[in-house]
Length: 131
Image (tube, rainbow, N blue to C red; front, side, top):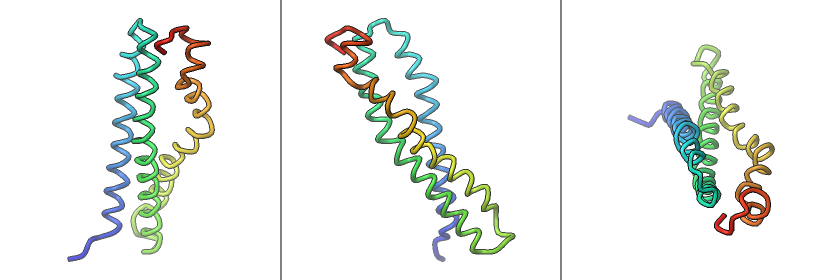
């Protein structure tokens, strides 16, 4: 009994997308709002800097892995013929989650770089040496 590459790719695409969504929800719903409720701005900036570092290291590869796995499923289903699965759905979902990385690089990276820049943080935002 061999390993079914399509089933494995489906599992990887779906599982990694779930991990990405779960991490994003936790950050958006719990971690960041709790951080913003603290009044200690000298705490917020260094915490955000570290949080961003760890989240980016985890979420980037997870998004890429999910996207590539979904694209592989689409390709495998397309190879089997016109009535084999839903390759368009896998193609669209792979492009959407894979598109998170270029979107972040093109639209969000400049803002994130400003938020994690400790020199700028001291001058502009928090006026705190602990920033």
